[in-house]
Image (cartoon, rainbow, N blue to C red; front, side, top):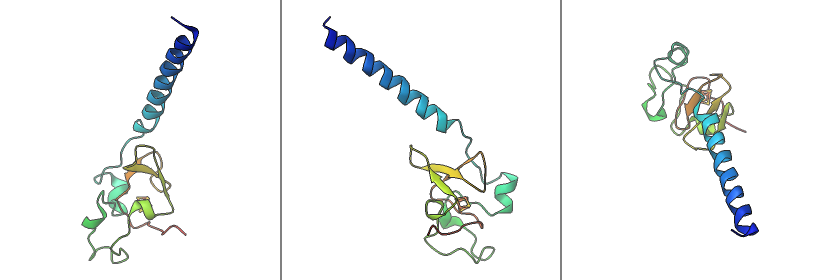
Length: 103
Ligand code: SF4
């Protein structure tokens, strides 16, 4: 085996390990479910189109977590962390009454 081939194999292995560790880090953050007590108090919905507009008149069509200042996207794309629901992942298409549009 040539030296270049050995270096390539070691770099490939390290890259795989690094990707695995990175994926594990964000998937270990638990997902926020709608039946969580804090989620119910703030009217969180995983799909913002299902917000009860009679109960939450502040909601307007198009608002979603991905547009909220409390949201930070995670690498896998469909979820992110939320400054209001600390330690949980919320759906990027979700919504709760703490929504504040990003400036
Ligand atoms: S505070 Fe913002 S990011 Fe967090 S759940 Fe509510 S709308 Fe989504």
